[in-house]
Length: 198
Image (cartoon, rainbow, N blue to C red):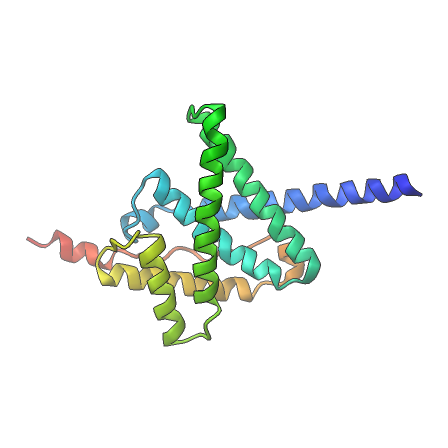
């Protein structure tokens, strides 16, 4: 009897971890879309890539937390998968064992700070107030208070709202199974044509 419960628990954890891995893979794939860098004005650096992954993982975690206890557990598993990946990536880049732990802790602090800012912005009612809150959160966190031209930031904020709406429209059952459909990243480079003019 006890062994059966333990087995079901372990099997459930394994399924949850696999679902979290699929969700994380989808978020990373989306965060690597070149339009976010070239058109969105995000620096193609380690920090810029981290910030874009966070920008896609936080809305996923937010939506999962709306799916009762199973969703909250999957949100935690998604966080765990993300930071396991960060740890592995640092090691692959040659960061020594002693420094990996410190770097991962710094990244976790950065994640929590950004998640708090995004959750506040995302919690605003849809409309001008939410768009403004998202824009300000992007300027502080993704752009580190050095944003590109305003039209690019506005386009990025619009994309984030589209992402939130897409996640809100997806079924809890699909998300809990690790299935997510993220909207395509639109062209964000309206400023490029102006930049190219002589």
